[in-house]
Length: 344
Image (cartoon, one colour):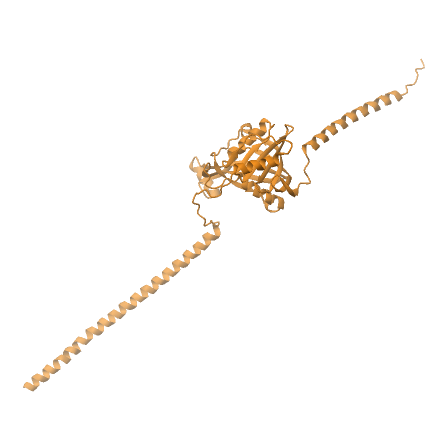
């Protein structure tokens, strides 16, 4: 009996082992299924993430193609480009030219004011260069008046180049009384047409205009706003200068807002209103140095005001001569007329 009991005791653990084995296998199968499900879920999530990344990349590429490139340079607002422009005029200027000079000074917060200059027998070039050196200026705008009717504008840098223009069709701010207005001391956007990239002398003049009329960033007297445009157009072999205000108008009612948004894609409409002054520059000569030196460009189509006035006087004289000649011919014709005698 003891042997049988021992056999039963020996068999009983095997039976227990056999009985306990199936639950372990089931647990392993369940764990494997759970792992497979997790792997399937992870693979699905990875595919979804990859699809989202691809869509985001495509959207970014489309936006980059549609939107213009934005410069990566971030302004810190410091005054680094220390440009100072000397603004002065010669003695004997008229009221119109003096008002034009004051309007230009208001548009240039980086200017250095100087009293009227008496050039003397040596000319204005040497005197202006000495004043440039004493006032520590980089560029100069000199308004020269001759015979109290002809206005010439000099633009130049301290070491050259420089250019001389004849100014015509002058209209000041007070004279025109335009509706445009901008903040005093604001920085302008300088706009040039395509001609300033095609002709060599206009490229040089463009750099002069940028150095003289461009307000440096961070200047103490300038405002950190851009609310006006200074435009330079080349037409009829002359440079036409205009000054505009950038005006943003908001719609007054829902209908106007809907129309502007449909046409422009935004609720506000941007337009430009002229401020003044306006004038026309006729280039005469471009020099390599400051107020002299080698001639880089000479305008062959330029006619001086003295030459134009002499031609006008000559035309008037020719008209007088023609009138006198016609009177003489009429007198001779009347004298040569023979009237037959009256027989009665």
